[in-house]
Image (tube, rainbow, N blue to C red; front, side, top):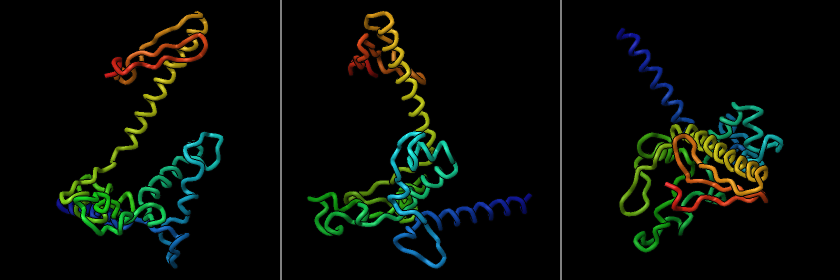
Length: 209
């Protein structure tokens, strides 16, 4: 039993070290190396055509539907990619020098990858410690499980859009405005009114929780 526990502990430690070693990855198109360790696509190549759809080659939706494994790998690489000053990272404000009491921007933006701050449940993976924003500091929130939250949001959006389309369809058939409740996953968003001309009256703020 002790041997098994030690073995499992060793494997877990090894996996953690591997994960830490790959927490931040260089762009081989910008900084090639003989080991070819890093990301073989440029940032523009990985961004591709944006969200797109199933018919737009290079878009995220196209890649997800065609090769889910490839889409997960691309997302991980974007998260772990070491960005450059030209790409908007690094000490963008006065090289981080100045009075932080009067210019808060110099205390942020000192990390060069998403994973360097948001890779662990606590603190700042890769960089160590906390992310400084003012004389005080904060723990950068981790993103574990964020994909599930995004999927939930996509499902809720699909449900709400279906309700909107149904309201418009019924309004055209009945030749009068039709109001339907906007509710999905137990969350209420008021009601939406579809009109015979195809337009919709969105819920007012007082209708929303």
